[in-house]
Amino acid sequence: MPSQGLEGGAVATPGLGAEAWGRITFIDDPVCDGCGAPFDFDPGPAAPCPACAAKPKAYTRARAACLYDEHSRNLILQLKHADRTDLAPLMAKWLSRAAADLLAEADAIVPVPLHPTRLFARRYNQAAEVARPLAKLSDRLYLPDALIRRRATGTQGGKSGSGRRRNVAGAFFVPPSRARQVAGRRIMLVDDVVTTGATLDACARALLAAGAVSVTAAVIARVKDALEVSM
Image 1: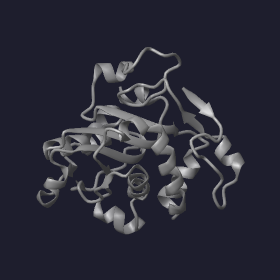
Image 2 (image 1 turned 180 degrees about the horizontal axis):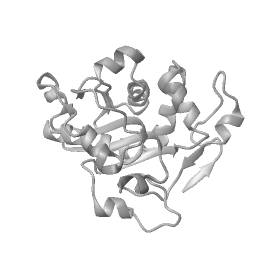
Image 3 (image 1 turned 60 degrees about the vertical axis):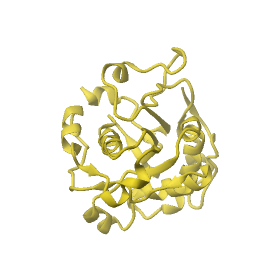
Image 4 (image 1 turned 90 degrees about the vertical axis):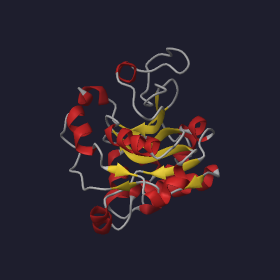
């Protein structure tokens, strides 16, 4: 269930006051065990939302720290495009709280990769910037290059759920030189924002094909009405 306020270690950081953090809507239980979407009431342990019940993803469970809305969007865009990598350790703390039960079952953490051309232009991968301190906080193995984006996909914005799935289908793979890192391990994927889960699903399929035992996911924020996009 969404909650307002400075929870989960959301303290002020240089250049951003407590008022900005206080407007963020953090996600607390009860949530869908499959995608992390907040429930308005408690349907019972490990209950899926209608979208997950109708179409399960390759990743088995997911958690999000907060809702992606007008209050969190600016902070995430600063991390993503404005060189505010100093925000990443704090957001890792958010995930260490929101995904604590998933982290307890994970062996290793893998960031959702950028295509090399986009990585060159941006100079850093925002998912990796969060995944690295999260792995350190949780004492989990960090595998920054276990997953590769083999082709430059167009933006997911503005696409339907089926369009998003087509856009990232087959876009990710585990290089043969990294397959031994993945095989036999329980992997947690980390990304910044999830809408329909198409990107995470494509990543999870690649990891499972390389021998991962299971894949879960943790993201900084999730779109509240992802079900509408997924149709």
